Image (cartoon, rainbow, N blue to C red; front, side, top):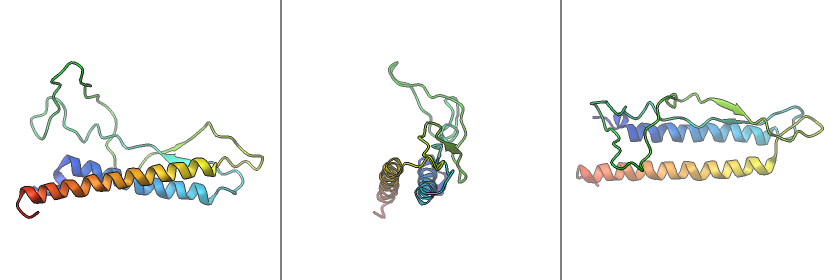
Length: 138
């Protein structure tokens, strides 16, 4: 079975691609901080509901509620892909020139995005290491 068929790796790759695309969007916001009339954009986080098998599925790994306190799997939503949905923040302060970019907010988003990307890549590489160890090549 190729590693690309393992749902965890597919979700991590999608998440890393989303973080890369979000970094591009956030950098455009920063670059246009002085452009009159510019409104900052952001990306909607990908949903992984369809990438996990349904509760009644016979293929793949299924989620089981072993305790009533566990959260149930909620349905709906689209799987993440290489083209991510864009969102505009409507609660922005608009300056007299018509620009709504706050450099402080954008830099906080950039730093958080960078940390999340590093976490996803660390999980991905450690998961690969575990698989290599399991097959005797680690």
